Length: 125
Image (tube, rainbow, N blue to C red):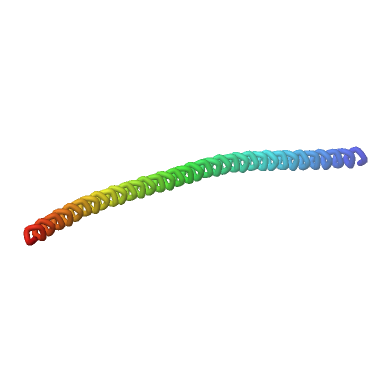
């Protein structure tokens, strides 16, 4: 009877060992699953990081392009104001020439008028 008891206990221990082995394999499979999920999350994180850096570079590129356009616009505006100033300078020079011409014409006219009046006065005397 004692042999049968030992045999039963042995079979019980063997069954428990197989159960523990099955649980170990289950835990190992779960660990591998978690490891695979971790690698997947790491890959996704790296992908997001690369995408973020790409967007950052694109943003900086757009910012530089915008500032370049602003500088170009200011340059064009400055050139326009320079042209306006040059035009006003030419207008002022034209008016100066007109004024000089009128001054000469008036001076010559007054001189001629004075000479005429002088001759008229001389003829009366």
